Image (cartoon, rainbow, N blue to C red):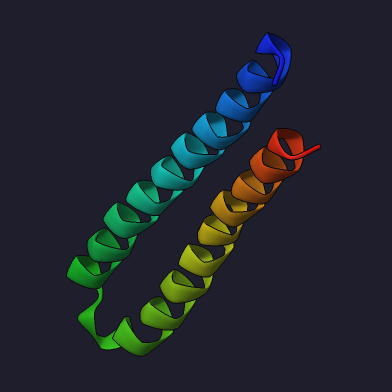
Length: 73
């Protein structure tokens, strides 16, 4: 494995993980803020929150996939 390949793998998984982590943290905070303001809307907020978390987690999985593709190329 070359040095550039290792750097590419590290950047792919590192930036993908940071991005997904930030997205999940921001989504969590905003969901709890919305629940605090309007508790009656909990089912709608919960559904949108979970859908957003799924999309954020998908970004992390794609970053892992790219890292594996770069690693075993």
